Length: 163
DNA sequence: GCCAACGTTGGC
DNA sequence: GCCAACGTTGGC
Image (tube, rainbow, N blue to C red):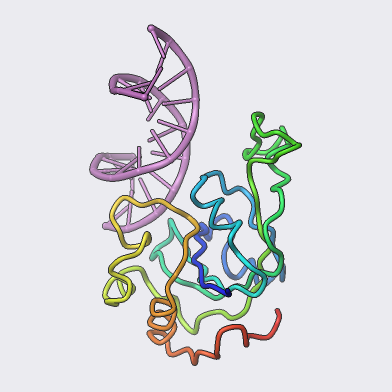
């Protein structure tokens, strides 16, 4: 069942423009079990809202697509990486990543403030106080409301061209 | 298995 | 830069 998701990224580290530039990116470095479990549920073709966190202002910058389902995050085995996890067993890797590709940049950044005003977004890990989850599902209603707010015409799910 | 200490996230 | 909220760690 295709689904919608939200991915947080700090634009100073990796922005939506960076994703467009590289064309495809392994979504590595997720080190939270709940977020990891969501990554593992993603299917090829699933669509993701790309959120800029720790930005001024924070908000939605674009749409990305899952182009490879979850596989082991190689950084967990790299002692030089800040994401190295010495306790991860190579026989049963603890952390996963997916590959994502750009689909479209929003015509304008949709700021968090504006997102909060959408009734569909009143109940979401994004708007709930104190939640820091960096990967989580988005309902079809949230998806539609967010894109409508920036005037993006919504093709039927799964009809986005492969990036 | 509890829970205090610590580190991180992320808006402001 | 501040700090509230939360997840993780590790002593016991």
